[in-house]
Image (cartoon, one colour):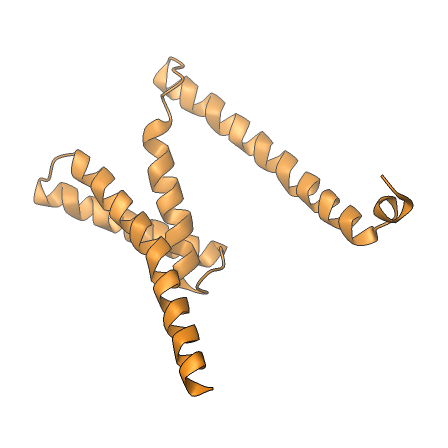
Length: 130
């Protein structure tokens, strides 16, 4: 490590930001894990696997809701509301439970492809204009 890398205040601020956000987030995740294990009465390594797809779908769908390509809290809140409404609608229709996972997967695929398509169209128009 040379002297420049040790004296980089920008890198120091970034590292502090990771620690300042990462440690409380890990603490909240630990408390959530303890609460989840307490409500189920048992701990299984695959117990939370059903919760991963809705979480990813909400985060990535939230990134397309308000500011495309940027993960933000308001977009995630809107996405959670959308996903909850969709799964409630599926339950009201009497659909099988695996359709909820299909709905989450379709929302995740859409949330990843929509910004890509929009970005490609934007750059195609920009190239055509020049």
